[in-house]
Length: 416
Image (cartoon, rainbow, N blue to C red; front, side, top):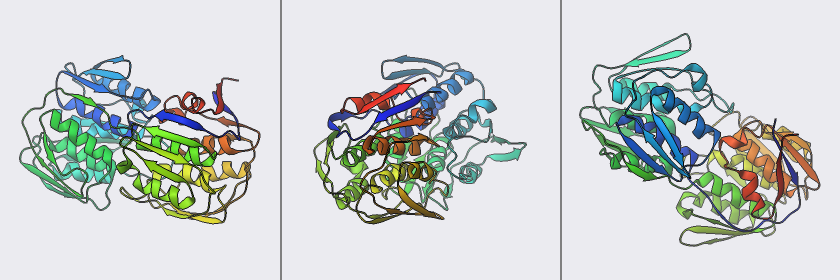
């Protein structure tokens, strides 16, 4: 098993560019199933989740070629509508394939998806949306079968603004007859990116980024070329890395509009933030505790809760983080405690009492974002830390150790 070995107490300095967003790439890859031909995607990160999606598309009949950071996805040979169970279990994002497969073939069979164990993430909202469009859905023995002789536009109202369900409904509706209106839609930037790609294919979608999305169905879609939006979670992680190491880091290829809830909190914590046209610079100051509540966009992102918690462990005073999205997203707390952090968890709330320094320890990444948080803690801690189970981290951070090395971090990947 690979692990990271980190020597702490090094101030990170310099410029770093973030690449395409995993959370935008996966639904866009799924959307290529809606047409026949060669789609070209640029700035695609090399991550284990992306490779898993490539494998699924290949099993369905697609031919995929990677050229640098670009993917050429030829969907001409797509013929299957069933995804093997072992591939579904590799990542939750495989559920995105229900919408486009149903839209293209009017039939799909999948097992329940896997992914990080950060709490229940039921797909009832996905199923409800597909049923509204006319699909008949049956669940039995761990499988979901959806079928529709015809998909018809409908009014879809979500009880909760689910990102995945919003994207699935969009992809199912673009080839449906008539007009679909999605209300209480998720507003994340990745949904805007999906809308952009769908419209390049010939779809008629408006409203992404707001709570109401309108889709006028079309009869056919065509291959398109698209550059994936930058990864705002990766960008936020590097900004927090600058703060926790008392460094001076400029993150390039990122819009401040994606991260204003995060940069506002970093300023409140005591960091100096400078926003330019396509970059954000952070210079660390004296860190002080704050209160944070995770919320759907434009609120504070749940995917940056764990990295921010690491930062608050070395901020003066007491901080409170309330996690409203996923109920089991404090698995990193036990590992941070091994490094000396003073954290108490009560239900969905973590109370952090700041200390001056954490100390190096042997810890294990319990999931993707928690793994990122442990790397940040190790960068600031006294002594050497070992972070095991880095395969979780590789799901969402492309060559994290090399990028941190470029900022001066002393971190290596080891097989020993």
